[in-house]
Length: 177
Image 1: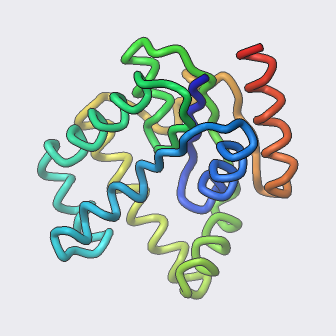
Image 2: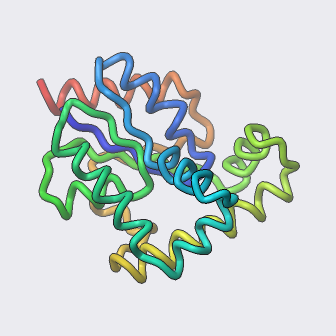
């Protein structure tokens, strides 16, 4: 069983991924944590590392190759902005899920998590998302707004994480029964 879970910062992917992986007995690999670790290893902030990655596709490609290898190993919930695209292009069978969320709600969540006020969180999300959009379009020809590769799109704006978990667990059980 392979599930990919993708969404923009603050959409709820991390919260949902941990619970779904535990409920289904899957390993959980988080691409965002790996990217943050790579930034920390270089002594850079997330924004600085993202800016560096904009000019050096080796960073994204190394991360994505690592994530795709995990996906090929199976029995996994792979959480990454491009996870659905990676398995689609790599022809790895999976349940591909995107979690959608209103921009302001996402910023509220990110601000609460990172200790920023709403305006700062909106600005931080905006810079990060523009960097990612640019990199993914330039390096891979992927438009993050194109959700056509996903089997399931869930809007988390007004849904409790528990409801999203239930929907995802049911979809996975139906898909892999």
